[in-house]
Length: 304
Length: 222
Image (tube, rainbow over all chains, first blue to last red; front, side):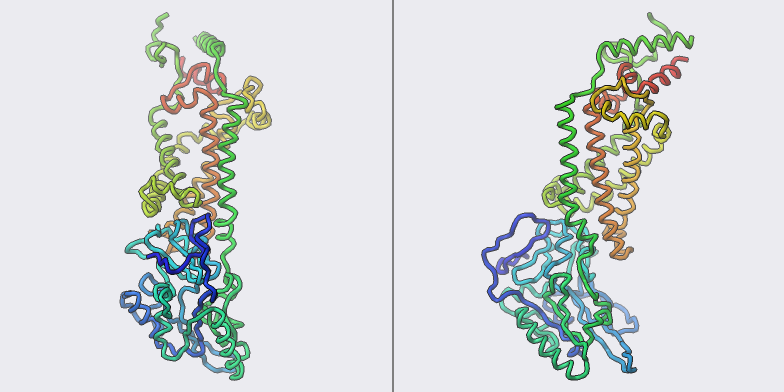
């Protein structure tokens, strides 16, 4: 599954530097999802299924348009529909295409204990290499967006690849290719930011004064960005996190705790070794054995 | 010198009398706990730090390491819980334990004659007992929360994060404690025999656990 045409910036559970010689001169890539242009047709979901050969189980209607209702090992992207009543009494239908955000500082990769199961390419895409995945689910705990899903069939983690296989050969992700309204676009991150800026100016001119780009700094920015009409309230969009970042608990567990714990254990073992070589063993002498036997006799005599 | 009770006396191959410190059930119980602990420490470390991920090969790779670890954990917890029931009454803190801790310098420098008289366990062993008990409970509870195949999906993600961190902290505590435990057994000669063969010499018992020695002498000589 490893795509050698995409150079690797980071590998999970790897302490050495991966090959760094080639860096993309054009910078990283990004997918921009303009929520204000989305009509909720789910063509992107279908394209994702088709390109990736995924077929989720047919679910049930839960009274919303969400179908399926959640991400799964077979559904790497899901449209989330929110009916939002604004202060002026208007009803807004907010539709967000949910899926992996491809964080610049990926919590899943930080949490992953399996060498090479999660990689970040130099183009910014965060990809799971299932052949190395051990199914522990640490990526689920690490992700600030609740994206990775562990398959019950093979105990491996799955999520959107940003079509790394397509991008590797110069194509855009399947969802981008299929989007009929142009709500999803793909290019270099710089270009996508410029494009987003134009969209935001347009939205502001139409009365969405809080329109803005969702490219959260807490995770170093993302390679999937949203244009939101209410960028001041991301949680309106099916609980898109306000200020996502790697949880401090994950940060400590997968950060300082690792070298400190290894050092602590090594120090404990070394302390024992040096105690032995400095002080030496605690042994029972022949005299002490004899004294013990004498005392045993004394006790026995006392009792008889 | 052939008294009747000598027929029941444990002796080593050269005829020196011995005291039974751990009976066969206690030894088996201890070693089941110990073997599962080693498995758990190695497989756990494989999933903790990249420098040790090669340890996963000992268990048949990463997936097998992930599968086996929690089951071994259940065995260890149950086995340890039985040990706790067996040894609970020997691990109550008593007079002299504080003094023993104050004189830790004498302990570490093999000056046992200066220490207060010790029963079956010294204060260090008792502290180990309770640290292990605490860590074992922490590991079990947090381990269930992060057991992805069967339980993790019942818990909210912030709880899983806290459990993962708690699991690491307890594992660190227990591994360091067991390193000390193993070292103490290597350092105090005769201790390994106590848990492997079940017996200690009179001299060992009197030197390291004089109050226990006396109690055993008084009870078995009726």
